[in-house]
Length: 297
Image (cartoon, rainbow, N blue to C red; front, side):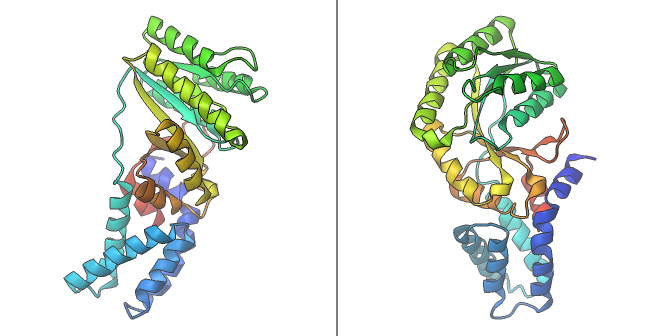
């Protein structure tokens, strides 16, 4: 199954959540209450009120300007507006050597995502080193080692409780010496000690910038798609701390609330780079706004 099939499949719950409502709405024609009801449908898919209002207002203005009454044109217009919002945030071009620091709260699937991301770059014929810089969660390094073995990549790790920045230092030093294409850094996710966690992430950020200035550095936030709108508050917190370059979505196949991604791009202007579409090792795909839009509308 190609990426298009995977993304459509992963968004089935979201699409099912709104498709029947949209069909019922369009079957009644474009009347006085049409736009209010359309806004309610978008909000039901976890698109924020602000973003839903923006989408509906754009559609209303365009339909009025073009004197559109045919529902098929309005559906196409809805898709165009959503796709434009998803494309508002510029996706950074991945250049090598590259260091990816993955951040996010515990439980979002960060370590699993790192394993899948390593596998993705191996398939792209890149050499990869993992840095086990979550030194606080019990067995985090062991879990990452399992993924390193499965992806057949190197891993740098220290004892539990050691300084995460020391792990990052050793990993980037090793990568430089071996001309490694990609370093992927795992990090702690204890958001309940937010100040300490953010200070740790900022310290690791400085280590990479100081020790490996020639590398292209990407800070990616891993978000559990099933959390819906709550993911926006997480994104704001991490973006303030480390200036995020992009988002990786996990568990997209487990939610009917995939519309929050539209708000994420529209309000925070942080691009989505990768999407987890299932449990398998190769179920991590580059994000595509057009295909995502087709998946939800």
